Amino acid sequence: MIAELAYRDLEPGSLARLFGAGHAAVLVRCPEIVAELWSGLLEDSAEQMPWEAPLIDIARNYHGSGDITASLGDLFYFQPGRHGYIARKMALSRDGREGQVSARPAHFVQGTGQYRPGQALLDKCWTVGGRLMAALAPEGTPPADFQIVVQRLKYQENAADFARLDALARNSLGRWGRAGCALDERRWQAAGMLSPRGLSDLYGLLADAPFVGPLVRSLNRLALRSDRSRDMAPGQRLIEGAHFDYRYFSALCGQRDHMLTQVFADGRWVDLPIDRDTLAVFPGSMATQAYGVRHVLHRVLHVERPGPEQSGNPRTDDVTLLIGSA
Image 1 (cartoon, rainbow, N blue to C red):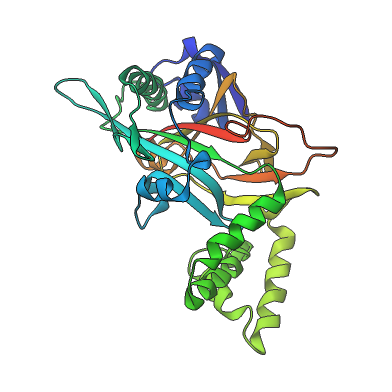
Image 2: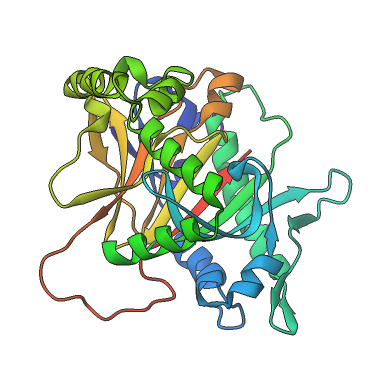
C-alpha cells in the first residue's frame, strides 16, 4: 500500500514500477536532502514567510489565476472543508540552451525591499524534482517538458484559528459571494452517487430549498452510509477535502503536530507519514494522462491533541514543504 525507497535507489522508472504494482504512495528516505531543502526554504531568516508578513505584502506577492492550482506567489486561501492554508508557491523552469534554472515569481516583496531565492537553492530543488520526475516516467520513456513546483504551506495549530480565518475570508465577500460560499459548502457535502460535478451542484442548489430540501438531504444521508471516502475519526476536522492533484506528482515533507495527510487506498483512508526524514510521493492526474499511473485521492485533516499546547516555532510548526512537477 505504501512502499519505501532510498533516494540513492531512485532511477528512471523506479517509482513507475512501484505505483504500477498498486502502491498508493512511496516514502523516499533522504534525511540529508530534506534537511538541506528545509534549511534553505524555511530557516533562512532573510526571507519573510507570508504567514509572518503584513497582509499588503501578501497581496503584492500574489500572482493569481482563476484556477488555484495555477496561482503562484503568496496565497491566503480558506474555504471550509476545501482549503485552509497560507502559502508561498514558485514554479521552476530550465532554459533548454543555457541550462539555467529560473523561478516564477523571481522575487518576493518584503516591505520596502525584496527577497530573491539563491541560485544554488533553485538548482537543488530542480535536481530533486527532476530525479523524482525521471523515476515516475516508465523506463525508456524520458519525461517531456515539465516545471518543478515548490510550495510551502502553513496550517494552523488549533481549530479555533481555522474558524477565525474562514470567517475573515468570508466577511470580505459581498452578499452574493457569501451566498455562493454557502452553496459551495452544501455542494461539497454531496456523497456517493451525488458527488460528481453537476449532480453535486444540483444537490447544493436543492438541499435548502422548500419541500424538496429534506428529501435530497435524506438521499445524501443514505449515500454517506456507504461512502467510505467521507469517514472521519473523532477529533478530526476536514481542512482540505478529498481531491486529486493535477500535477505529475507531489512529494511532501514537513513538521506537523496537528495536521494529517491521508491517502485513500483499498477502500479506506491511510495515514501518510510526513516528517523531515522522507519525501512522501504520490502521483497526480497528469501522471495518469501521460503514463497511465493511477492518481491518488488524498485529503488533509486537523487533529486535536490532548493536553496543553506545546510552545514551538510559529515559523515552521505545522508547515508542509511540497516539491512537485507539472
